[in-house]
Length: 111
Image (tube, rainbow, N blue to C red):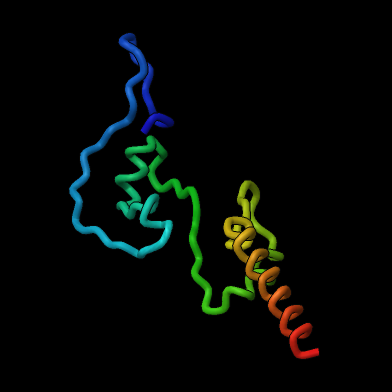
């Protein structure tokens, strides 16, 4: 991991750890290219974080469209809120535009 490297008299040495691969899965989506699940303590040691340090939370909601009410709540200092609209906003804008265009075309065909 280059961001957690260590400077020595011989130069920069990246942080390295040996992990045992237990299994793989394929979601047939873009997450296959970048998601890795690892024990929190092992990841903290690899990244040289203090014990118990948490860099983020991931919440899965029963109703994802209620994210507006959650995002309005006050957060502790130093905490940043990012939701699926920030990460995948272009996709949902494209879907909305396609829906509007299909409605327009349908109304022109019917009229």
